[in-house]
Amino acid sequence: MTALRRPPDSYVADVGSVRAVHQFLPALMPGDACGIHTLAAQEALREAGFESEIFCEAVHHELDGKGRHFSEFPAFAPGSVLVYHLATGSVLADYVNARGEPLVVDYHNLTPASFFRRWDMSVANAVSWGRAQLSMLVPRTALGMADSTYNELEMVELEYRRTAVVPILLDVDADTAEVDPATFDRLKAEKAAGGVDLLFVGRLAPNKAQEDLIKALVMYRRAYDPKARLRLIGRPATDSYRSALDAFISDLGLGEAVTVASGLSDAQLTAYYRTADVLVVLSEHEGFNTPLVEAMRHRLPVIAYASCAVPETLGGGGLLLPDKSPSTVAAAVHRVISDPVLREGLVRAGADRLAQFDLKASKGRFVNALTFLTGVSV
Image (cartoon, rainbow, N blue to C red; front, side):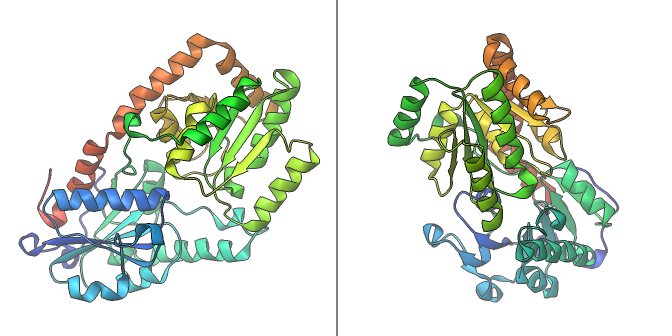
């Protein structure tokens, strides 16, 4: 934990009176890394003896009962510390800013609006709003949490008075992952016909640069494996970017080689991880990148462009590229696929790195980051 100067006394709780740590999240959605983190944090807080509810603007029907509408909060307020999860603009930021309870901002990163302006101004405006709120909450916040040092530095630059790095809380036990049999069998049948499977998991978004993955696939098919396939798994951040990707794939004649899928269950997604040959990430901007950790969990080697928080998250658990030209990426994929010693070394390195995301230990880090507000450590 990184500690800066002490926040104003007015924002330090009377630790003897704190009995609840309640979390605020704009939307609680299945499969969303921020939502998974929030649910795991709630579990950690309850295990530490606190009352803990999650308050939202919206809760997906699959998670009915897991979150409450934020209008219910006043009945739960006495003796509370608030944790606000910030990843986009939301009326909830204004709501917690107007409250009097000690506030923790858990910052999950905001993609710069410049990535979205040519694609969807509503998305660009949402992240610009979130960035304005990140600044607005500085004087109100007792503790700024961040998923990575990269994110923490943004908070430091904004003059958050006390900060801590606590990685996203994830269950990294691969043995507990269920696999959808139908999806697994279909993917294995496709693989039996020949061809390497490149995988990307994450939002279809301009900052994640899926067009660069498609270019790399073209080069790889020309130079090494004409049957190679690319699986792009994730929901679109904007319809216009998704449409542009579809048109790009069609123009290149890759309709049979590139799969674009979203709305998968956890078991279906596991089938993609288990049947892929390599995860490739060429993002221009990432604040953490959960799929890097998921790939390690499934013993899948990782190749990634060394941008923003990616080197920090990967932590030696994969192959980092200094540039992402199609020829560089294709050559790296070929090396990993064709060299079993390198492949196994990357898998082992990923397993070593994965151990540092152990859920029990991460839960303890989350609770301990709050110690000066709550008086409780684990």
